[in-house]
Image (cartoon, rainbow, N blue to C red):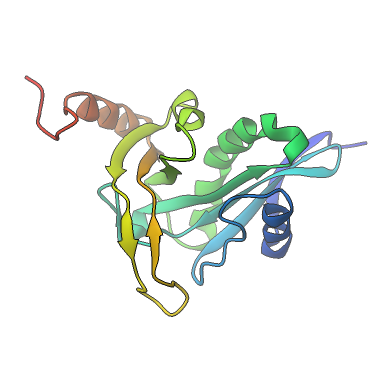
Length: 184
């Protein structure tokens, strides 16, 4: 049976069905703009999905939308939650290149962590940079597909594609205190 493991583009319908079946708290990804879906297969069984999308906001953690690709959804089958981390790492390795072929080249991959639902350790352990905290509040409707809603506080994690840019960003953020002032 070959390949034993694969990670590749899949159709959006399949990704949405799995997000619902596996109970992702946001459910299907219904953004009406750029999107790509990936699947992690083990022995030809789909066990995790990752969905790329263009960012909702024009700017994200100091980057313009046309410089980013967002990890909009990440989910593994309930009996295989341990595959979430490998799916994240594979996504950040291949998704920016796939995005560049279909949409535009990116400088950074981004992901929003709901600060109430989880700690963000999955990103920290994979080497992502914690770039910004976004307080909760109320939004919208800012588009016909986006109803007014309350939202939880979030943390924006970034993965600069260029290694030097990644290290420079880590150094810059280490020199800033929680209140935004520069450490001396």
